[in-house]
Each structure stands twice: as C-alpha cells, then as structure tokens.
Amino acid sequence: MSVTVSWKAAGHALVSPSEMAKADRLAVEGGVPSADLMEAAGRAVADLAAETMSARRASGPIVVLAGPGNNGGDGFVSARYLREWGFDCAVMPLGDPAALKGDAALMRDRFDGPVIEAAPDALADAAMIIDALFGAGLNKPLEGMAAELVDAANESRAIRIAVDLPSGLCGATGRVSGSCFRADATVTFFAPKPGHILAPGRFLCGGQDHLHVADIGIKDAILAKTGANTYLNDPGLWGLDYPHAGPTSHKYVRGHLLVLGGREPALGACRLASIAALRVGGGLVTLAAPSETYPIQAGALTDVLVRRIDSNFGFLGILADPRIAVTLLGPGAGIGEKTAELAIRALESGRNVVLDADALSSFAGRLDALAVQNKADVVLTPHEGEFARLFSDLDPNEDRLGAARKAAKRVGGIVVLKGVSTVIAAPDGRAAINANAPAWLSVGGTGDVLSGMIAGLMVQGMPAFEAACAAVWLHGEAAMGIGPGMIASDLLDAIPSVLP
Ligand SMILES: NC(=O)C1=CN([C@@H]2O[C@H](COP(=O)(O)OP(=O)(O)OC[C@H]3O[C@@H](n4cnc5c(N)ncnc54)[C@H](O)[C@@H]3O)[C@@H](O)[C@H]2O)[C@H](O)CC1
Ligand SMILES: [K+]
Image (cartoon, rainbow, N blue to C red; front, top):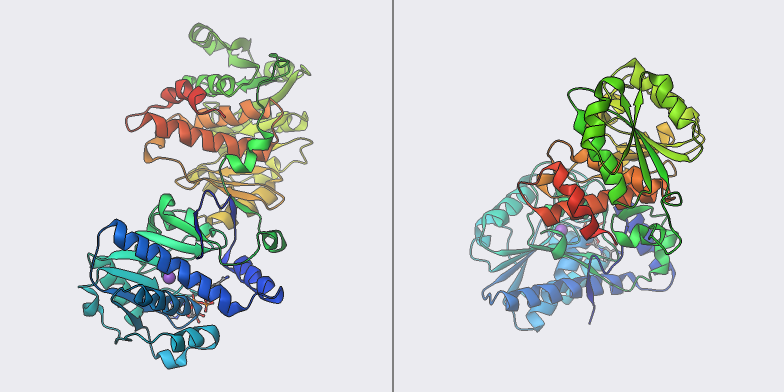
C-alpha cells in the first residue's frame, strides 16, 4: 500500500520537473524498475480517489483522462486499481492509446476495463474525473481536445483529482497559459514542485491541504543528489537558526538596530518597523528621526530610543556606534539622492543592511550603485512595483523564482520578492516560496512591519536568508490569526502569538 503523506510532512524540499526527472533516473539507476515507480504512483492516485469517493459518499462513474505520456500511464494504473476495488471506472485516452510507449504502454496493456472515446460531453455525468493528461512533461498551453476535455471537466459537478500536476499548470513556475484543470486535490510524487506552491498553482491543485505527496519508492537520500535548492518556507527550513531568547540573553546580546526615520507623510512607517523589530526579539532599536519629526516620533514611541538627526551625517554618526549591527532604511524615508547616498554609506559601513520601500525606489535605474561589494549582508524587500523599477529586465510573471534568484545574484544580497507567493532568494541560488500569506495582508504598512521583523531577527544574529524566511512566514501567520479587516499595526500585537 503506497503511503500518501501531506505536503508538510514531506518536509519543505521542492523539486523542479527536471530535478524530478533526475530523481526518477537515479532511482532507476539504483535498481528501482521505472514500471514500479509508475505502479506506485498510480496506486497512490487510486488510494486518494477511493478515500475521497467514500469520504464524499459519492457514487457513479469515474473517468480517467489519460494523456500521451507517463502521466497517462499513471492514469491507467489508477483506473486498474479502482476497478479492482469495485468502482465503475473507465479510461478516456487523449489520442490513440496504441501510440503509448514504454511503461505507459505496459500499464495500458494491464488495464482490462473500458477505454472510451474522448468526448467532452461524456464527462457531464462523471462522479469523479482524474486528470492524467499531462504532468511534468507539459511543454505548451493545452489546445484542441485536451483543452476541451479540461474545460468540460472544470464545468462538471465531478470531484476532480489531478495526477502529479493539474494539466495546464507548469510545475517549474506555477504559471498557467490557456486552460488548466482545476483540481479538488492533487497527488504528486516524491516531493512537491514549485508549481504546486506558487500561485495560482497552489489554488489549482486544490489548496495546500489537498496536495498529497506520495512515496513511490524513491529514497529521500536521492533528493540531495538532484541539486534541488528550492524550499517551501516553513519552520522546518529555518527553525534551527531561530534566535530563541535564553537565560543569558539581554538587550545587548539581542542586538541593537538603527532605523532611519521617515518623513512626511509616512511618519508611521518607521515606527511600525521599529516596534516589529522589538516584537521579534530585537534587544534595542534606535530611530534616527529628522529634526522636524523628532517631537512627533519621540512622543509616539515608548519602547524605541529616538534620536534627532539634522542631516545624513547625523545618521552616520549614530551608525558609527559599533554596537549597532543592523540598520534598516526605507520606510517613509523619501525617494531620492539623499536616501540612496545613506544606503550606500550604510552598506560601506560593513553593517547588515535591510533596504525597503523608498530606499529601494531611490536606486531605480541605477542598481549598479547598490551592488556595492558590501562586507556584510544586505536584504532587499521589494514589492512587484519596486522590483520592476530595480530589475526592469526580469519578469516575475514569466518566472517568479528565476527572477528573484537572478536579482539576488545581481545585487549579491537576499531579495524578498513580496506578493501572494513571496519568494526569498539568496545569491548562492537558494530560494524559498512562502504560501501562508492571506489576501488581507495587502494593506498599507504591512511591508514596513515585515522589514522590521527581518531586521529584528538579523540583529539577534540570525543569518540573513533564514531571518528573511522566518520573518515572512511569521508575518503571514500573524495575519492569518487576525483575519479580514486587519490593519498593519494589528500585526505588532499579534506577533508574540506566532513566535516559535
Ligand atoms: N518519478 C517520476 O517523476 C515519475 C513520474 N511519472 C509520471 O510521468 C509524468 C511525466 O511523464 P512525461 O511522459 O515526461 O510527460 P507527460 O506525461 O506530462 O506529457 C506527455 C507528453 O505530452 C506532450 N505534451 C506536453 N504538453 C503538451 C500539450 N500542451 N499538448 C499536447 N501534448 C503535450 C509532451 O511530448 C510530453 O512528453 C509525471 O508527471 C508523472 O505523472 C511516473 O509515472 C511515475 C514516476
Ligand atoms: K495531470
């Protein structure tokens, strides 16, 4: 009996379709017959289908849409098991099943149930439709009969289960062009793919609680040999690096962060960031407030040290304090030469630097000035608009993971590309995809809170990539606990409830 495990239990390692093919190849080279992999894959699909039919008390015909490759082969296996278990199950092949090759042809021959002609109308009465049309081998948008079958399936009242990937969804990028099967649940193999986690793929698979990762006999040890360095962002990825407060930790051990104060009209942004940094455990935060805002900031803040600065030199003068390990520039700082100049001086100071909002926009069109050989860690936290201004040649809509990775390599720092699927990328190629951000996070000020959380974890010594991943995940969890109607400052009180 093959075991389907939920995607969380499968850990956070993700494999691209090409890395998956390598895992497949390594398993076969290691002595696992490829037909056994297909048998286990199809069996896992049948397991989920049978469990779902009984859980939903569904009865009626099950139709397996079988494609021209190995995804279709999985479909024939699942249909065979379902018929053995007494279900009314037929296979509807796309094209001529005689053209199937290799293991798929073998599994076709082992199936002795009905093979029905491809006809979209014939799906209307199905109780369940299993999509085994295309999986990792999808290489163009669906067209013709494939698109018609998927559209008809989506319009039907049938329970829909996808094999490996919903047909039409790119496993590497999570992108869809044209028709795509909308699954209630998806069974994938060995490890999730980025397309299962990046939006809209996550939703087309049925949501993260309906993505099942089946063990089909490929040893976990093979994962390391695939070169996979893409991760689901969750505590399993950064928990070991998390700076838990201990009996000896005091405010200086937990670090001193310097935040550049903002200007009118966004005076609250730097306050949100400063408090957020304390909330995740930062020891001390100094807010360097331009003199015209000093009375307001000092009056509004209790837990944050507020110092008046009259110029950039004032800020750099405070930054010269060796106890300040991290500095955050951007929230409300104002876009322009002065902010850019400060950011460059901060990078040259050898401090760990978080650049957000205006500090990013101040480098639009002149990224080379930012890509200084900073001696320490730099973290950039652009939303899509800021990203487009900084990296106009990279298109996250085409390939979100790839764009974030190229940007990180280009600036030699961590890039947090914020959005419904925030991607955290490191210059060494690592990338994590975040999947817990609720829609109500897209409200003014939440980015300021996030940049403060990142800086607050870094100031405690957490490595930059892990700090960014942890902050993004905690930020999403805090928002999930608040719900619609949330405003950014609500996050500040919610952070303690989600800290590990
Ligand atoms: N360990 C594993 O990875 C296992 C994977 N299995 C299953 O195999 C598929 C991948 O099979 P593959 O034959 O490489 O590709 P597909 O079946 O996804 O596609 C078949 C074939 O179709 C052509 N094609 C692609 N896109 C289109 C399109 N839009 N229209 C028409 N034709 C298209 C292309 O030539 C493809 O090669 C994987 O998903 C798993 O389900 C194993 O069975 C178990 C182990
Ligand atoms: K599929």
